[in-house]
Length: 76
Image 1 (cartoon, rainbow, N blue to C red):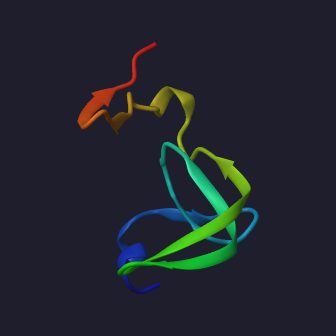
Image 2 (image 1 turned 180 degrees about the vertical axis):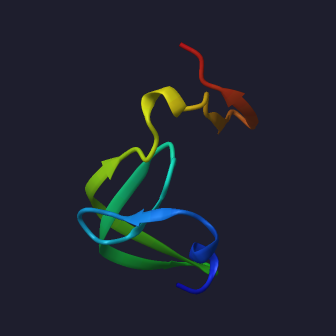
């Protein structure tokens, strides 16, 4: 294995074989439906075919999210 994935532990997803980084908070596997040009980027639209978590519930940290122009933590 060469490239950036050689630097982190990962496994292959059950539906598409995409790389899923070990310990990830969440993952989504998608099948591409369409691709649209959007200025200097491409917008890829897909259907979710599998999702899950690479972390055990006891390992899941309090995630940091960007909302309302600020970084915030999720709290119960």
